[in-house]
Each structure stands twice: as C-alpha cells, then as structure tokens.
Picture 1 (cartoon, helix red, strand yellow):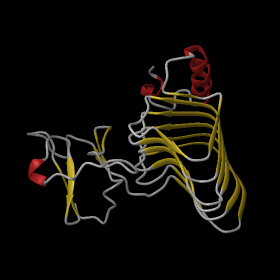
Picture 2 (cartoon, helix red, strand yellow; picture 1 turned 45 degrees about the vertical axis):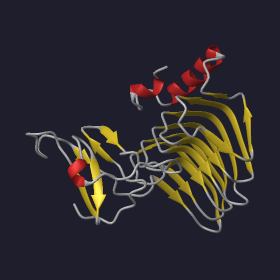
Picture 3 (spheres, helix red, strand yellow; picture 1 turned 60 degrees about the vertical axis):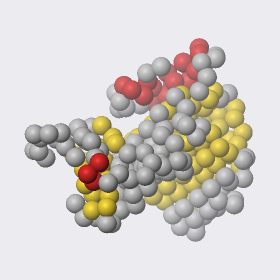
Picture 4 (tube, one colour; picture 1 turned 135 degrees about the vertical axis):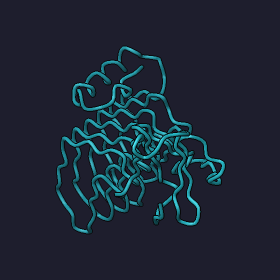
Amino acid sequence: KAMKIDDIRFFMIFNGKQERMGRLSKWNRSPLKAKDELKEFEWTIQNGIVYFRLPSGKTLADICVEYPVTSNGISIAGKMTRNLIIKNIIVQNFLNDGFNIHQKCVNIHFENIAALGCGDDGLSAHTASVITAKNFVSWNNSVGICHVGKTTVSRQENVLLSHNASRDIFCLNPDNIFRNLVVYRKSPGGVEQKNCSFENSWIDTMESQEKQAVIIENLKRVFTDKLPDKVWER
C-alpha cells in the first residue's frame, strides 16, 4: 500500500496484536528490513510503500490487518485556549499521541483517561501549556508521558504507566509534579527528567507491594471492564 507516513511512529496490528518493528520514538530504533527479509506478521516501508507478510496460505480475508490513520486521539492547541475539562475517555492506537497539547493552553484538566498503544506519547504537553491530569493510565505507548517547552507546567495524580515501549517519563520542561505514580514493567529508557517532583511514587520496584496494590486497585476501579486484562497483571 502506498502512503505518506512517519515510519518512526508507524505500527501495524495483526489480529489484535501490535507490531512496532522496533520503531520507537525517543529511543533506539531498529532499522527497517528489506521486504524480502520479512517474517510472518512483520512490515516495512520502502519508497513510500508499506509491505507486510502474512502467514503462508493466508489472505487478507483471513487476517484482520490494521494501521493508524489519525495522528492524535485528542488534540488541543491555541494561544488563548483556557479552562477545558476532558473526562472519561480512552484513546487507542493513534499514530502520534493519545492526548496532545500545543502552544499556550492554560488550565487544561484531564480526568479518568487512558491512552493505549499509540505511536508516540500517551500524554504530551508542549510550548507553554499548563495542564493537570487525575486518574490516568498510559499503557503500551512508545512513551508514557512526555512534556516539553520552556514554560510548560504539569501536575499528575493517580497515574499508572505500564508496558510502554521506549520511555516511561520524558520531561524536559521546568515544572512537573507526580503524585501517586506507579511505573510497572519499566521501559528500556525508563525515566528521563530534569524538573520532576515525585510524591508517593514507585518506579518499577517490588518494594512496598501493598501500597502499590492500593494505587493500582484504585485506578482499576476507574477503568473497570474497559482496559485489557494485561494492564493489571503483576
């Protein structure tokens, strides 16, 4: 299939299973294979053409093949954007970010949200934004949370980051607070930050298991029956 695509964030899904082919945002990326090197359920891009290989004897009628066509789940931008509340929404399998905030967006509040399986960040604020997030799950994205911008400010409470492919937290902006944070199954890049404060937080440790279980259980109640069971595996 011919398409104009950002191959750094691109992925495909075969029968519900996501395949990134090592194309990770903000981390070490595997080079794309030649089309003749592809194994079953692998893909590559050559000269703007996406190639993928199905199992021998199978056709497109036998396999559910999906790929992302939209950049962000929720996009917010503007130099005078103020006082928005985004609640009770789950976004999944977007090419770029689950929740993306740009320019000078002030007093943007997210509550009871989840970002699953996106090509870049679960939640990302840029430029000069001021955001808060309460009850947030970021699962199997490339990056769990990423904030940048010289004057961006973020506050996060009750956060579960799990199974993210490249980094869990990547914050280069000047002011971030995380309260009640659990990072479980830490990504290879882990946490990279310059100006983060962590309160009542546990990052990929089996210490304080009882406290971790309490935080995870509270988050699970928020998203009960809405997220894959894998999210809650310990």
